[in-house]
Length: 410
Ligand code: CTP
Ligand code: MG
Image 1 (tube, protein in one colour):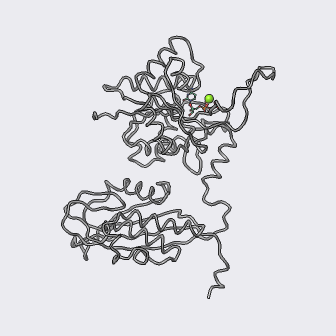
Image 2 (spheres, helix red, strand yellow):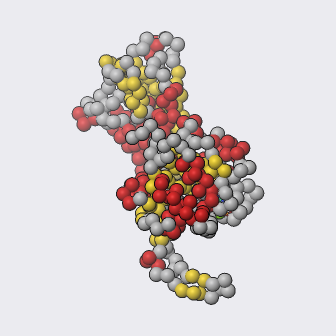
């Protein structure tokens, strides 16, 4: 693999959002506090960890774009190329993005084109698109149609009824070999075609073969005001659950032993020692696991995974945490937030903080904005100060369905 990523992602965000109304382009409007653009960037950055990401934005939207970036975890913002200006149509905006990527010393081998207006694209859909693109050169996600579709004349007269089983409603991201799609866009432009509403249509027009892979119903294109309302409802924390909030506390310590890396929050961090323990000795995940179990008063990690049981020897601690989160779900509840503090003189946690947050978020099924990781030394005092080991503390916040009046408990 070259030093440059062989994959680039273009996120088109230069539309005016006229159908959504509300006076500013929809991609800069928030859903549950985070703009569609920041959500789309984060989703694609997480699904394509090696890719460069290029946003295409309106000429006057630089300030709104910069504002949207402030909503992202810093390491994601760092993966973005300098944005380029869009054009009057989506097709023109994509072409501008493609031409910008073509200027790079080593253009990418593949490109995924994604609408900023589709913030909920799931990672497995992106993986399917990538696999099919690498296999056959062009892939789009599609979902089967529920309604029968008619072609209709301007006066309302039905022209004909396409066979529904042959129809697919296609979404983004759409994946292509970079060079063939660039050629297709250039040819379409030279031929005066500017009415093609997705990149597959540009590719098809140029004679490329495009395959449809399974899309996802939640990968909606936010288009009208009611789409914002539906998205808001979907992301609000258990809006109509009559529930109660519980907070659990966890604490763990592991000692250093000879080795060359420690595992903290599911992330291997190079170090002059390892941590000693029966499992992988991930103090951070152990503290969070106990915090989650604590929030539902369901014993502790040692009750569920006894250190005396040989099956947990060397076990990867994400299993413990995933188990605890499942216990919350089994009670009809939801984990909504995790906050951990690591106490050690070394290794330095700061450079790994965001990787740890992402790892913990993935294990817990939480957005990364609901996971905090902090670190401190103990000023050379005590066992952590003497560099004998690492300690971690955590709290977890859980929403549980309301039970009988707690004052009635024995
Ligand atoms: N888009 C673009 N440049 C354009 C038109 C659209 O980059 N000239 C982008 C939009 O920002 C959006 C995606 O293409 O992320 C899909 O377009 P659409 O949902 O139609 O968005 P808008 O054109 O902004 O909305 P509307 O058609 O309601 O004005
Ligand atoms: Mg449009």
